[in-house]
Image (cartoon, one colour):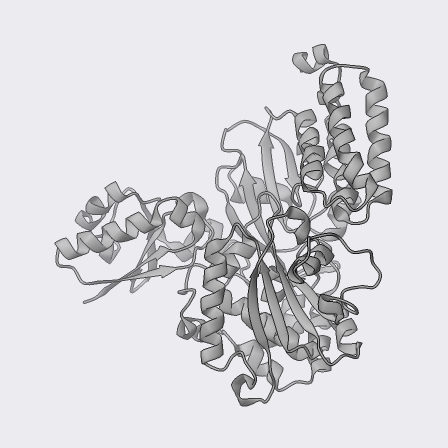
Length: 517
């Protein structure tokens, strides 16, 4: 009997040795004359268990991890190919609390399917959304997305249906759909997981967007540091085109949508939508003044839908199961689910997809298991390098756009970076200003000049020079950047700086006090 085993081909798993483990399993099976079928599947996002090896049994998939090359012979000795007992045995993977307590809608196939198997995708509800969309008018698709309550998952949280409706209403012979996949926030990886692990889902979502607004061309702007995602998407597009899911006659409908992948320019500011459009047009990635909005005057001056990966990846399920199904998850104006990414000083880092409403404390303690160091949590940064720092006393806040905004935070792309009580928040504030100084496109003065001056001022505070007057100056500088910057790069850099000042003032005290603290 052929035994089926699964080892992830995700970049994180590979960086932890998954390729070597897969090769060792093949070699050991050959040596022992055991017939196996080894599938390189996507990752479930339980990164502390990678390389995770799963074995298909009658009861379900049994997991072993983290597995090293040296563990492989002993695993065979223990009969792991039949789910045998071993110190690395985890039991049924689907029953692991980390997975079982999640609400995986967008990431439902993650860790289960072969990323480039169209058959796998179709067998797991793939392209069910597109088939329904092909029977609807563009306006009906837009109405469905609007009714679902989906908001942009890239950080701005703008209602996706309203954005699509603006493009639908714009008159033009050519419209575009652009996926912003320049995932550059520290501590985020959900976009990469989708592109590497479930690329047909993104392709399907973009195709539905094209049908909705009347766009026939699409581009995926992929972070340059994601070579595997780039290659996987290109191959998936080739397969989808071959089988009629892309092209001039989608599934015999006479409707067209073509898709291309573009490598990003390697600059953080190109994740800003107008800078991304400049880069796609072959220009330097500089921010454009708005208005006009990209929905009216976007790529090559034409109406353009711009969404990030997770927003577009959510669309197929919404079309397949209906707006109400998706809207029933979540709270308040934050509907559906969000893939949250646990990183930093945390014991069990990985991806947690939950409906809006889960608290940060639940995520960090119940899923993440607290800090890796075992020390108390002191600060948490939510929303990437421009997100505010929250204190340990604020961790009962619910993950919800409005709830976080009420305490001065942002949800951003769902990245959660944890720090223990050894962190120096004055240094973290300095990092925010330094990051902006390095990544600013330079178009507007508050961002271009303000950020290096911010570094200088914080350096003086850290050195204990005129601390009180320098803090006053720093707050004035932050106000200027917030009010006067052209885009979120300069406008949001003050978030981590001001939150560090507000929640951790002892770290900005004069040098003797800092040392004493």
